Image 1: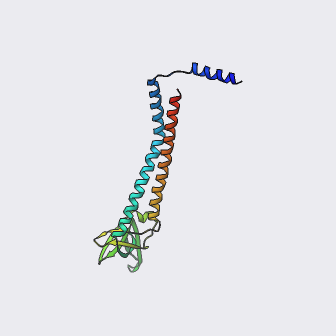
Image 2: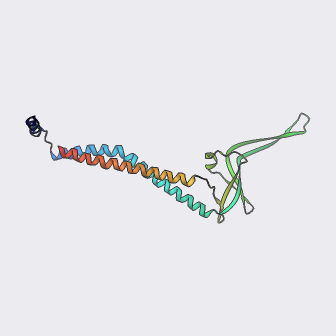
Image 3: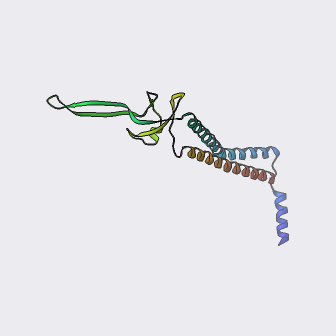
Length: 187
């Protein structure tokens, strides 16, 4: 039986297809291209998540340091149309209020009324007349910060998720590249 396997190995070596160095490079390039095309987008997405997560975390920390004056803001609508209702005799019988447009945050700082039209009003599903704590930058009252319990945590989680994806993709790419070199060397 041992002789049979030895003969089989010898037959394989004698009849194995021999490829040129040029063919070996072409095969390596072809397989390497597909390796990077399959792993590359995920690797890039992981790096982007890390960058965006860390950037937003540091922006949030910076806003928190700059905006130190606490005021109470009120959520309102961009357009409020108040009308008086009249009865058939022409007497005022009530009021009608209609709201339209986007939500705005109205706050007063140093006696001046300010409005902020931030996307956070939609994201957190605030309603008209909700009162919200707002921190104002004393040097620039238009610059505000609205603390969220999970804001910094969410940005760090995004950065960590991106780092995990990046490490996994890099490990897969390195592993596949080593396998590719072994496969090419076997020819």
